[in-house]
Image (spheres, rainbow, N blue to C red):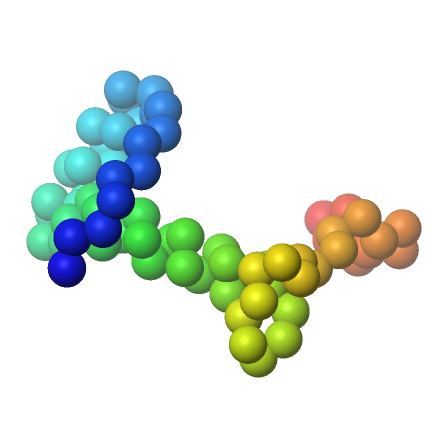
Length: 68
């Protein structure tokens, strides 16, 4: 299934390392990026309907992650 293309900038060295890792694991770079984006959206979306207009508020004053 073809979908519209999304472009973004990445340092050439990082892109080359990413390409090499994907080749070694025999996965496409596109598949990996799509999976990472989907994981990010799922982890940062509230509700079973996965409504992306309702995003987790990460500006909580007592957030335990700030101490890490």
